[in-house]
Amino acid sequence: MSKPWRITRGDQQFTVKDVAELKLMAVGGKVRGSDLIQRPGSSEWLYATEVEELKGLVKVAEIDQDDLDFRPATGGKVMRLLLGLLALAIIVVGFGALYLMYTRAPDSAEQSLFGDHEGALGPLEALATEYATLLSEPDGRAQPKGEVKKDSRVKLIRKLGDFYEIEGPDGQVGWVGIAQVVPGYKFRQELSDKFDPLFNPDRYLQMANYSWVPRDDPKLPRELTDMMFQLGNPTEYGMQGVILKITFFDAKDMVIETINYEVPRILPPMDSLHLEGIEVEIDWDEDTRAEVDILGARALLPAEYSRLKAEEEERLLREAEEKDAAEKG
Image (cartoon, rainbow, N blue to C red; front, side, top):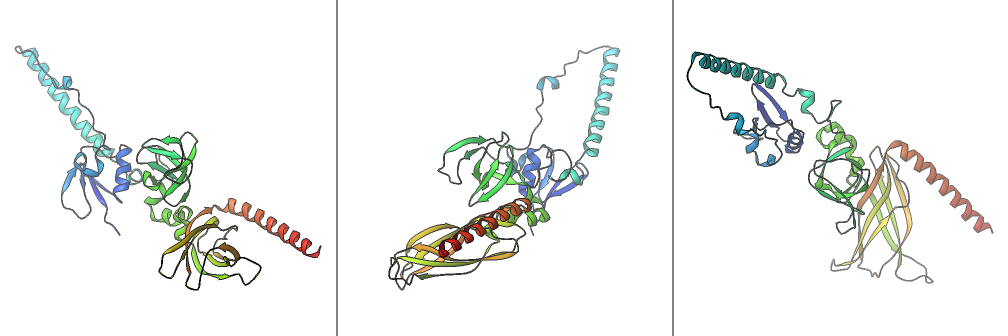
């Protein structure tokens, strides 16, 4: 487990989990330029404005030089009295400001980006860490359809490969790179445990077994083969649109062909799914071998899973009845 960053403000001290949370606090104005910050594992304290990771993120109050240009006239007891009163007022105001700074340091709830307080980042939200082009597909070469400005809050929909599908502040839906946003669920372990499978289902799905065999039918092309898969889902989310990357190699381990196959069935939560009879046409010989990887999937929240699963069962029943009727006819 990584060590936290430490922040000192006056006689108050608090910690943040990692540099990502530190950056988000800086963006939200909760880190001041006068704060002292200690890196994990270091004994050195730096001002927030000196921390390389916070360059351009810490808001520094600008001071009007005219406010500092005091040029009082000289002479006279009245003038000396006024100067004394002014100095006393400055001291009182200064101590008052220090008192407010100490007493208004963020409490344990405000230190977190989560909770019920105003400005909290929800677990299904993300913060754009840079300007991003909103893409029409999860592909860096896809057509742009909009933009997401730095520090914008977006809603997370799903993740596929190196891209998140998001809904921007203007309601537009599209794809951005995973490095361009920071998901809210990442900052607390219990939230990460709950929501990480929702956005990274391919990390949790298991390929229990797979095989491929040539079609033993002289009437069919020799290149036609059958594949069988056994997929396991240990998460609490049903999975839809599971994409399998099937790569065929020759005897020299050279790639013959790569096929992306989308599983046409919904994978139930905490269960497995057996698929067979999947046709793949490939120029093979006795040394050909196949490897199967899970490329992506879309995890479903309970309400959506129940609805889509019911629709799938109705469809499968209808297809079975039509097939039975065709065979009898």
